[in-house]
Length: 274
Image (tube, rainbow, N blue to C red):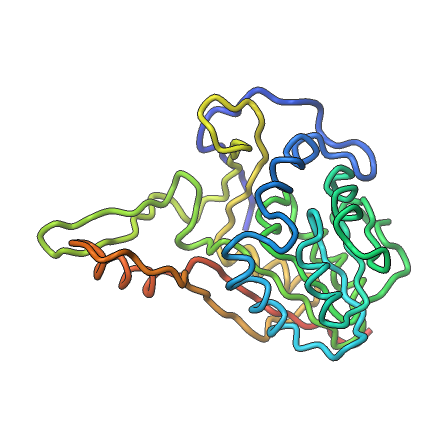
């Protein structure tokens, strides 16, 4: 499938040039302090309640396994894995986020600044497993990322990807709606099949001039990319919000809609023999 990215709205004023060097990403560097304050030491609500334990369960690793936390940010999952007895390496393209990860984490966790799309990144290193949590949608090209994952993984090694569900959670293209006649809360999807490049304000304030980019892709793009890299999808899970509405006229409908429209998509793929 030919990939053509379309912008869903005019792009905000750029904070600087596009990345040119290892560990250089102006978009995420300028958002680093805001993101660090948002997720803190142990992660945001959904990270703590759903994403981190769910991803760890999907990885199914014994203690001592060597894990690459891909696009590790400021190290939330790296620390989680380390506390579970894993040998952890965190990789992120933003040197600012890597600095924050080192400040917050045990010195035994190794953090590296580098591009997950680069052919020389972590050259010669191998891992039992790779995690990529809530970050694959921030990467412009997934094919080289999956190719690298296949290179980094030992035979039979696992790659676990968690993303906002691309069928139901597309910034500015999916919304909640209310059907008064049926007393039903529904999910409206305006676009799905078209790949989109969408600027996200950070922080998400109307007067903010800082932004990062998210890339929407249909499921086909993810499955095609993994297959071309020689990674076999062996598990797919859809995770729902665990929040409950306060009692009210729409609470029953709201709670039912949360159970019907998953918030996250989780994929586990395995590397073959080399």
